[in-house]
Length: 196
Image (cartoon, rainbow, N blue to C red; front, side):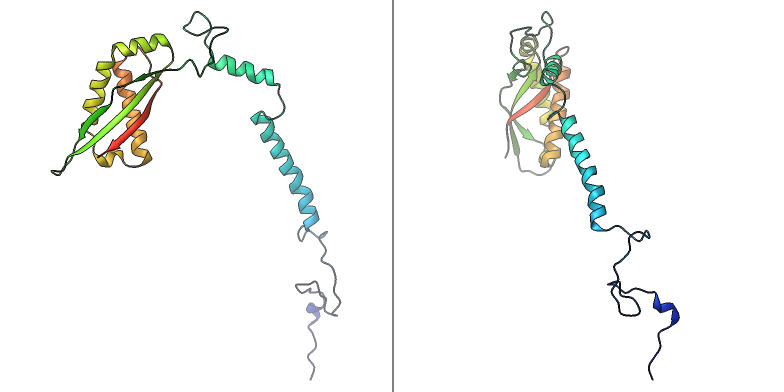
């Protein structure tokens, strides 16, 4: 006996859009059942182009004049003449940075066991002007003392990984700014670090 399809199954479509009578029919997107690839591309491509255009505009690749960008750079980096800056015709903002090399530091690290561990550290300190550099040189022995007393309390575990190095940099920067007041040290730059 042949089984007759149920009346509800006549309008059902299979995965290929096949009706009950075996005829292949295209899927209709007009009924809100989804978007075809063409419509999806027509929506996504303009959104992507707008996003890329906005990113390029705000990054300064196009849009805005080059003179505008140079003016912003000049305002941000150069100090006016008479305020310790180079004024017109002087060096740029990057060249204005001054560095003081601290003598090599060699300290024994704190250890719980009997084994002695040592840290050899070579750093440079960055300041904004030659006047600050001269003031910092005058208090360099005080800076070395601050560094020595802090480093002797360090353990090898404190220096592991980039997080340990970051914390060490922040602590040294804090201590050098205490010792060199009113001079503001901008950064502590590691030249060499050796743990034995």
